[in-house]
Image (cartoon, rainbow, N blue to C red):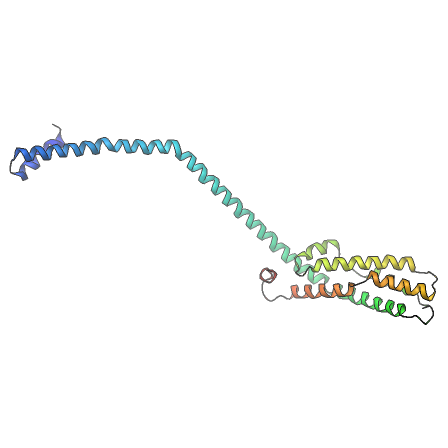
Length: 232
């Protein structure tokens, strides 16, 4: 009989009045319970250790993979936010740079379009002696039009301002090419009116597109609330 059993038996005899039946029953139950506790605990530990050995690496790998995915998403999101912030700041600077130039482009194209409209409506008169096409070419060529890089920087401006400016620039270049073809040419009233109408066709909607684009650029420059919220 081991030390645990001896002490248990002495304690039971002390409080049971020396009844052998009680002593035997309680001692047997105590030995059984103690045996179960001692023998069952290593089994649970064995199961736990087996699970750790078999499945824990897979779980750790899965957790690591998920963590890597979330880290990649976080880094990509942070990079996207940085690029958006840079685009917005660059758009604001470019808007300031092209603001007055858009006004000049609109005023110039509108003026020469109105002049050509007067010539086109001159059905009963003679030929306009002034070299209207040479003058229009000179004025349009002097315009400091928006560059391709500036157009890319203005993509962040709402209402498709960059697209409208690009379309207006294409019309201006087409009008310049038309003026070069007509400059110095000998006209009759009819041919001059036709040439004037062709010039107007080159600049169709150009002043209006420049006006709309300038309005968008102006709003973008002077937005009181954060640009990120205003663009949404």
